Length: 550
Image (tube, rainbow, N blue to C red; front, side, top):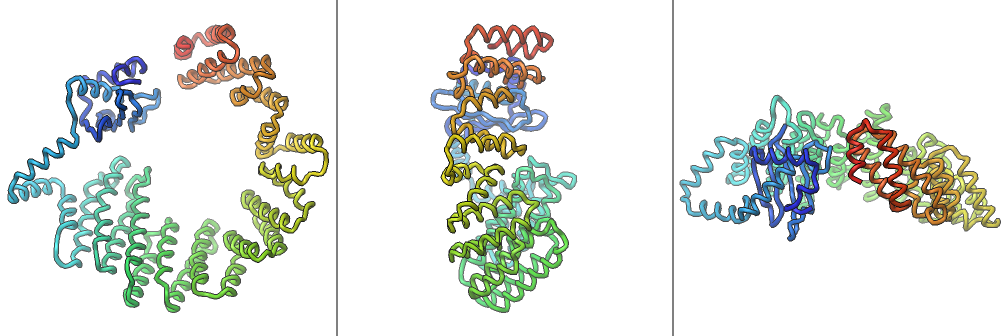
C-alpha cells in the first residue's frame, strides 16, 4: 500500500471517518523522528499515538495506532495521519525534526545567561518536578543533601502524575521515566552507603506505586528491577572496607524486613541474593542464615510459599558451595530433597560420579512424592530413562520409553524404534493402535506426529474425515493421492465454518478458505459453494459483502 493510493485499500467508512478527522484538525502534533518515520498525536476519546513508516518509494511498510479499535487493520486515526503525510509531501513541509532542534539550539545559544535563567525559572514554576530534577542533577555541595533533594523530586513526580490518588496506565511510562533521574543519581553518587540510601528511597516508592498505579505495561516492575540492579552494582563497583560491607549488609537486611515486600516475595529474594554477596565473614553468614530460616519457618504452613522457601534455600546453598566443604554441600542437598531443585542438583552430582542406581532410586522417590504434578513426574521419568540407558537395561528402557510416548513425549518414538526387535510393520501398527485407543489429549498429539512422520496418508485422511476443520493443514499431503476426498472435506469445512460465523472477521476467514479452495478444485466448484452460501445466508449483509469481493 502506497501513501499516494492508500484510499484504494481501506474500508470506505473508515476512510471517510479518517478524512473527517484530518479536515477537522484532530491531528494535534506531527513529528518526523527520522527520514520517512512519522509519529502523530491524534485526538479522539483519548489522545492516541499513530506511527507510520515509509520506504524510499513511499510504500507504507509499517503503521500502528494504540487505540482499542480492532474492526479493521487500519483505523480512522491512521487514515487521518495518511492524509496529513500526503499534505506534507505535497506542500514540501517537514514536521518537527532534527533541523528544528538545531534552530532552537541556535536561538538559545544567542541568549544571555540572565535570559536563560529567566526562561528556566518560568518553566519550572509550571512544572515543579522539573525544578526538582534540575536540583538533583546540577546542585553542587555536600552529597548528603542529595537524599533530601531526591526525596523532594520523588514527591513532586508522584504529585504531578497522580489524579484522584491514582495514575492511569497511559501516564505510567512517563511517571517511571522521570523517576529514573533518581536512578542515575545513584550511579553518580560516590559515597556507597549514601548511594544505597538513594536506591532504597526509590525502591520504596516504586514498590508503593504498585498500589496506586496501573502497571499493565510492566513499567513499574521494570523500574524495581533496575533499582535492584543499581543496588547490586553499588556494592560491587569497588572494594568495600569491612566497615562499609557490614553497614551495607545491615542496611539491606533492614530493608528486606520492611513491609514493602508483602505480596512481592520474588523481589525480596532478589534483594537477599544481593545480601549474600556481602556475607563474606562467618558472622555475617550466620546472621543471614538465621534470618532466612526465620522467613522459611514463618511461611512453613503456607503451601503457596513453597517456591519462595525454595528460592531462599538456594541462596543459602550458594553460600555453602562457596564457603563450605563437599560433605556440607551434599548434606544440605539431602536435607532438602523435598524441593525439586535440590533433588536435581544431587542427581547431577550422581551423574558426574556415574552413580546410576542412586539416580534411579532418587527419581522413583520423586515420582511418588510429586505424583499430582504431571510435568514434574515426566521430568523424573526422563532422568530415570537416561540412568537405565547408561546401565544398558533394555527391558526397563522399553517399558519406560513407551510410557513416556503415551504421555506425549514423541522423541521416545525413535528410542523405541532403536530398541525394537520385532518386524517394523507390526511394531508400527501396535504403537499406532495403542495411541489411537488412548484417551488423553497428549497421546492424540503424539498419534498425529506419528502418522505425519511415517507419511501414513491413509491414516491422516481418516483423521481429517473426523476433523474436517483440519483439512487446510493437510491439503498438500493429501490432494494428489485423494483429490475427491479432499474436495469433499473442503466443502464440509467451508459450510461448517460459515454456519458458526457471526461477524465480519469470521466471514473474511470463510472467504479466505474459499480462495484456497479455488486453487484445489477450480473456479466452477468455488462458484457453486458461493451460490449455496448466498442462498443460505442472504440475511447477513456483511457476509454477502465479503462473498461479493471474491
